[in-house]
Amino acid sequence: MHSVSTTSRQKRPPLQTVQSLHIPEALLKIQTVIEVTGLSESTIRRKVAEGKFPMPVRDGNRCTRWVAGSVSNWLRAKGAK
Image (cartoon, rainbow, N blue to C red; front, top):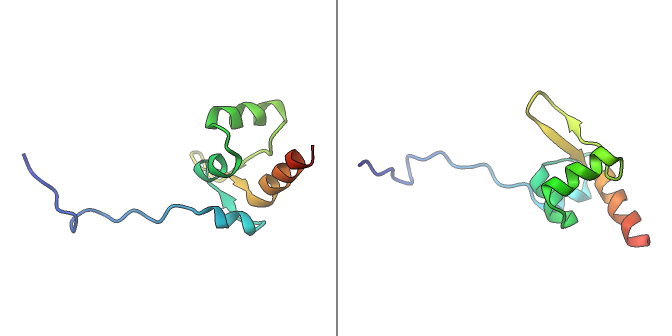
């Protein structure tokens, strides 16, 4: 059994922070949207399909992101109710 030292592992890029929400044009990963909304991934995707949550932006076949300004506006609207 081979052990892999930490120096030979690739470093992971830093996770996207919720501070990205303050940049209206920022493209948020699903993990960030989950963190800021408190919703699960399945709930977010269901609400998107129902037209009750902002549509994501597709950037290629396997890359889906949400525009931070749209998510912020949705959060504000939920808080106003």
